[in-house]
Length: 136
Image (cartoon, rainbow, N blue to C red):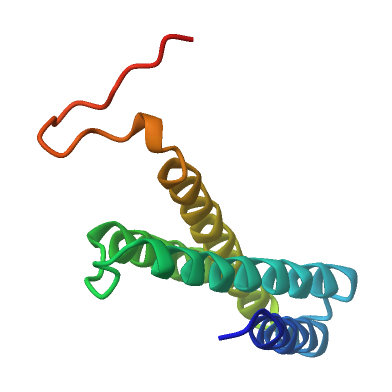
């Protein structure tokens, strides 16, 4: 996928989230901000996905940590939605906000993983289970 395509996809999702929160929850400024969070978060996740895919051979196997993080985000969004006792669209907006925070968290986690992959001096040797220590 080319960067123009995944950024376009991110913008479309961000505009949709902003429109939903604007219309149903009457969150005007917060809805636009939430849409921007989705644009940046989904764009960074797509970029990080492509960068990891080009560096890791075993990308096809799902990670247990990714499933655990997704489950935690879904549980938090459901609990938050149940705690908000408003019958308007506030519950939907709060749930979207929690999922947006989860997307940004995934983007940050993959970015940290990419930074660690790019440091070949700190990787363990093939037969050595312990990483090499740095002098500085």
